[in-house]
Amino acid sequence: MSGIINIPVPSHFRMGNLFTDNNFEVPVYQRYYAWKHNEVEDFWNDLLDLVQGNRNGHFFGQLVTVKHDDVQEVIDGQQRLTTSSILLAVLRDIAADWNKNQRDVMSDNSSDMLRDIMRGVGQCLRGNDGERASLLLQKTGQSPDDDSDVRSFFNRLMRQTESNMVETAQTEPTKNLLNAYQTLKKLVLKEVKKSKLMTERVDELNRVYECFTRDFYVVIISALSNEDAFIIFETLNSRGKDLKASDIIKNHLMSISGNQISEANEKWQMMSSRLKDNSDRITRFIRTYWAARKRLVVESNLYRNLSQDLKATNDAENFLDDLDNLVNLYDVLESPTSPKANREYFKNDVLSEQLDILNRLNVKLYYPIALALKMSGYAESDMVKVMNKVLSVFVRHRVIMNEGTNSLETGFSMIAEQIYSGQLNTVGAINQKMDEKLLKSNVQVEGNFKTLQREGSSRGQKKWTLMYLLSGLYEEELYQSVFIDDDYQLIHLDEENIQTDQLDAIGNWTLLEKSLANKFDQTTSLNDRTELLGKSKLIENRKLATQLPTWSMEMVNERQNHLAKLVTTVW
Image (cartoon, rainbow, N blue to C red; front, side, top):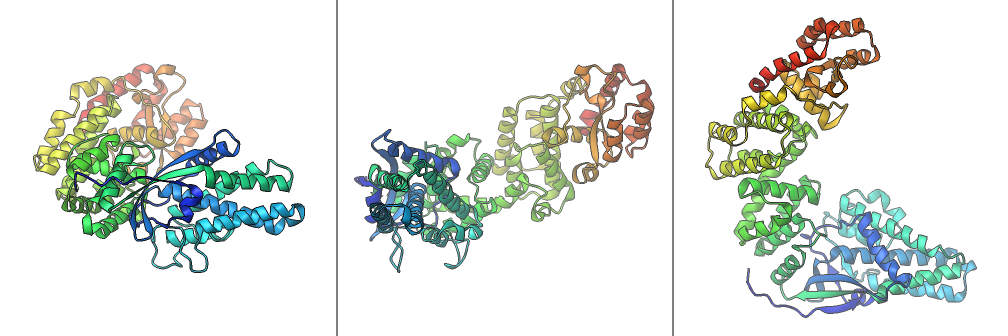
């Protein structure tokens, strides 16, 4: 890319003239319409300030475009343009409804005013009788009749009532478009219906229309080339809060793809689709990949860091190829058991179980290692050995020692980089590095475990962490029954004879079949509880049944000391 760009002279437009004087088109590689309720409501509140006389004008931001003949290709500003078009359609539709159904309660002047609104909006939006619409969104479907096609859906929404569109809004972008229309219609009607007389309501609707078309304004920066437009876009948005890092990164990749931009966009869309077009997930995926390939960076610095390394068409191609190769694995890491395709991604059942457990423990810091192993071509049997070490590191560091995660994130990323670069090229070398850099010592772990307490829960991370800790120490094959079938429940062995501040000591917890646990919780009879423990399939519970009649704090400590000796052999 050239280091010097041609800086265009910005053009100033009021919103009414913006649409009547320009033809806008959003290219397929730009992000879809993404504004949710909060953004739409903020937009309305800015307009309401003008309607209520609190301000005289509102700067609605800048648009960055590239002009091709008589069409302005939108590089930045499509969210604002789209929302503006939707507002105009809402005002037109309300005016049309009132003009048709409320004529008998309004004056001729009010009726003329409604027709003026309808005529003015028509001149802004255009698109009837074969005329080109003032704004065309991305064409994403196979045909104009395809309900998933964003352009066709938007065109219909601009020219039909929303009641005809509800069933066809099936994708995230189309749902956002419809929700924006419905939200704005509700807000406009709420404001204008504060007036009791129909004539006054028409006046208020016209005031909303005039304040928007006359007192909202934007600046268009129309670049001479796509390259210049991309650079301007990055400069304006790299430190902004409106866009996710993934949006700016996508823009950068398109800007350096040259005449390969269509292929680059297709690869991006395939990756994005796998992650449900969720900008947050895409950003997390790219950050994880970059941590494995290059270095760990905070999200706010991700674009800047990445753009310093990716400068040529070949760089973008290789980057996108890597994302394409890794996105399925990343999706599996985030959701190992659902859908079915994720559950069956690995042939090695042990590896699938490990990833499921890590997910239930809400462990994400190891993702760069998993991606690095995939990029380096390690077999699933080798990945099992590495994931086993990852689990050991996490259990010791976080579950037992309760230390912070910053050192783990940094350490896992450093090891991932060395796997990717080939510095660590065997399973033995990888695990040895984790031992040296991350694994807490046996003495530390055993000492801390002896006084460890863990809060139980009926769901979520707390439940699964304690479940995993106990099931691992019981040295029985419990994955299917504990994690998949969810047949077991956490119970305190005793809640009456144990000090309140020691109830959650590991030595006072066990797993019990739910069919027995419900009865265990409902009875206070020591004999009944002892009998129920004795019926358990678990060897540990049957052993505890013989001890329960004399259960005490001393026995809790004795059991916990015994389990402490097992911890460093299991993990």
